[in-house]
Image 1: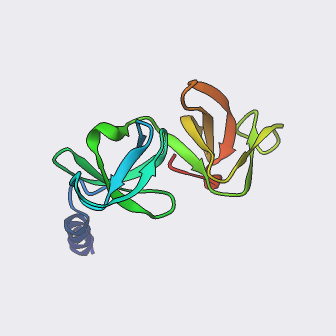
Image 2: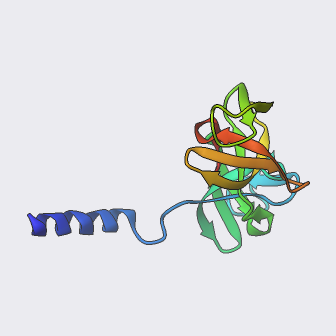
Image 3: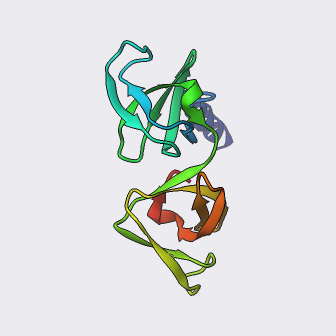
Length: 148
């Protein structure tokens, strides 16, 4: 039994591979052009805005390949990526509460597509705030956002 377990673990590690885990980041500049290939002359697919959360899948020289919350993919220059954690609201209306508890008062409603800076987490809650102002707004359930 023990040999079987080690054999399975070895195969999992081979399939996953070292360093294959995606990491989260955000767009660190305004109106970053997202390209189809890691080349400035390749087609521009869309523009991403400051704070837009991304999942970094791989890097090639000074380019980053990412996926966004809508499952769009593309390449951007590494200089356009920030390590600042952000999250985007996934639902039409999401309550932001005074604390990480469904019994805490709702202090405002967030709308689908709103982007917030992530300041921390507690259980299934995310502490969010304004990106540029670096100001905490409140808490939102983790299942209502992407990118945290």
